[in-house]
Image (tube, rainbow, N blue to C red; front, side, top):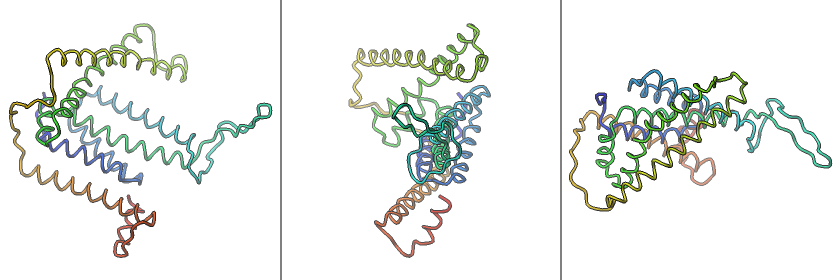
Length: 282
């Protein structure tokens, strides 16, 4: 296991803070900066190049899908047509309005994609840089209920297994002659989606095995626990993460105040400069 750069509690609070900032920010530039910070945290963990490429490819494909789907199926108003995919047409007496790509939908999809990328990079950095035991100790040290901490650790321990099963499925497909984009883009997308089925089947089977093992051993999440080893949490780390967490809480509170002002629920005149900052930068 790699040497721990930070205490697991520091990384847990930082990941939570990044998630809080991701749902607080609405400006693409601010969200892009947050994504870059999360990606930097992932790179610092020094993951294998192959895994890093797979993560980046997964994020890019997911973001591309979200942006395109939101651009096509955006329902809010106003909306500006960027171009026509399928023009309006009639089938008998039924009029179909056609299919369009909307500018506002693309922008909305971009915002959601950046939020997803920031949270994903931060979560992967946490999982790849922290052992399961230390992550469990970090959760319990933060007074997270034992049952929730246990479930979180089980989920984290299954991630490498899922990645290995996915690689095995891809290897089997390559041995059978599968090559991406050999038979066209649509065929490639369908083939890639088919890889999800055996991986999900394996996940369901393994989760059943874990549940049976816990039941056979009389596992009780509410039973009193023995004392765990303690982790040393440096003072400078506590101060650093407290400042970061306090910043995230302050930004989220500011966004709530702006939402109350925007919906004419609560307004304070001396907060007008703050409202302007939120409107143009957050």
